Length: 314
Image (cartoon, rainbow, N blue to C red; front, side, top):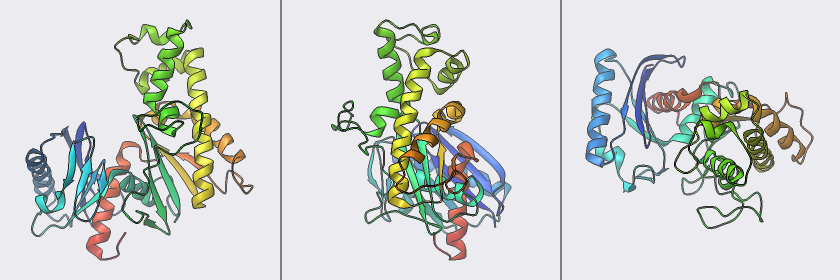
């Protein structure tokens, strides 16, 4: 069964037609508009384009970075509060499923990625912030209010740095790309030399994941130290999540992991295994990089639309 998967982010709107084996048959993208009427118009255009190529699509899965309930979507990235997106988008004969982007990514990785064949996993993304999608018993776990997976403000160090949420030691304040950028510039301003200064202006620049990967290749001591510390905190965080959820697998995605996972994941794994309450060998609890990369969300949302059309739930 063919279905449309759409990823509505704060920067880009991406869409795909996905078949029953998880293969992308058609794709497109454009910058994301912000006002709701413009978003709805852009979504309708994307769906029309997909149906022009594949008239037989069975449904639309729409993933949004934000809080998704049955009635509405609230998104900081889009500056939305309780927008009834599914109702606004209603496509008549074509069912529309709206889902949080982390949940959709987790579902995609379970179906066709690093968690293929498993029923219980955590999908973690590390980028500007840190978020998660949780699969329990082969289904998305949303919690009582649809907020499960909002893990970025889990405290891992009571004496840690102040987070934007007002608490100290949140994992986002210690290990997101934003936190890593802050720590690198702090080291440079403190007198340490780094190749980053040749790539980015410390007073106005943005350190991208690509810059970090380049600095690692050049064995830059500042970037190496900061990323090692961030990976250590992520390892503690991962161990705690596994202790709570008893998952079969942890899948890491996001721009930072895609660029620097080869360096960071071994540290994350080693630290996480040391903080588990029960001894687990790596083959019994793999901690992996996302196999689907950026496509996890669009593939997952399309699969959710297919599942809904078939009447199996999610």
